[in-house]
Length: 638
Image (cartoon, rainbow, N blue to C red; front, top):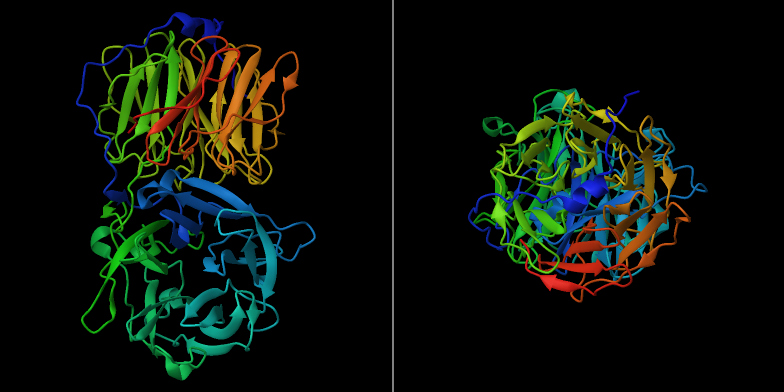
């Protein structure tokens, strides 16, 4: 058990008189949209992606650090923003469905039909050999609306099935499924009703390119129609191997795709390891279109090592544009390098909706934001005006998640950000300029699982918190006497943490920690100066919360938490020492809408500033003055 150090003054009193030192002027950061997306698309582990573009946004299912009991979807306004886009739990199997309630949410497929969205997924009872394929239906045309269980998809044999893959070719709907190293197809009358039995359309050979690591498998299917041909891309071999690759089957448009005779399989990998850039074992490739529909793209994963890794820990999410050869076949080229970047798809807004960090001192507020180029920029000012944005020194690797900031003593700001390589970076300014960035690494081997948050729990005392790739919350703390600690495991609420954590200190040596949970609610735990409490469920506003929370404290007897709701409003819940937690309440949203987690700070006792990104990438602020809200005011942001 660690012990906090020293007899400390109340931080709120310190900040009431502090003034943050502003650095010498640096060139303003232009408020331009992103032109590239950094790769991998997310920090840390990722595999089995399926992306859809709809009304200018990207919706993605994938297999990340998650092996839990809910289906998650990630949403962003730009391919460049998937790294810190909202991750939403859209369905959890009830206890009355024990046959799939142990594990769901591994990859899957998202499919629009008839004004609804359908999610195809696999679940099991704790034994993957008992896996069942099932389909969920959305409540309406919003891909993030609530989903209900629609039907099981019968397996090829004895109910066993991997997630079925849908494909609409002309007016005929097909489903494809993997079983015993082969690919099977069936016709369907709607997204959840088969009209034929399963027919085998492909079987892996017993040697050669389909047998990576000695496992001869053809698995998965994802279809696109181009010209007068139908192309089905699938994965070949054992996923754990660097020789895992993508194969392709081709059929003429109009053919019966449930007949093996309709298909011609490639004679080898059409997309394979690229040793020159350290990209191995590409697989689980799926098609998507650019937002304007003019380009064909694929999402896929690669391994970053040549190790045979059954845990999938070295897999990373990638995306690339596909061009077409003169004979009408796709040209996939080669896997990109993890750590490189790719031009955005045509029609991608490039809008930056990453959350803004805010830190207050002496009645002023400093904002920090990840820019579209992957830098961190600062803007400082008072209640009604702010300076121009200025860039901090380069982190050495593009920042891919929202920044965190806090002030541990008068005149000092510490800033933290997650880098594209999955590590945490730290810089500080004591009033005479910014330091270089320090690499804090990550608490788990697979990198960070969220953006950081930070708080100061007394003069020259601070902590930074992140979600690890294992779904747990981790802390790293600092004091002048002991400098930075090692990473401390704080566990996770029931079902795991779904968002970045946020921490606030309302009095000396006290920390309250908040995180969004697997059921889109907020959970909290607190440090009392000697030990951490258990996690407590604080429920949810609206029909669930879809962003990380943010928190602020006026004084030792009051604190507030905020998060973006599924209904688009910002929701608040506050605590007082006299009455405990009040009910959730909405504080509305900017006229153009809220598009990020809120940033919250209290400049002086009784005052709260809530700042959010708007859909355009600008930001808007609402201020509580002690008796009423000011109303949302738009301002130009990064």
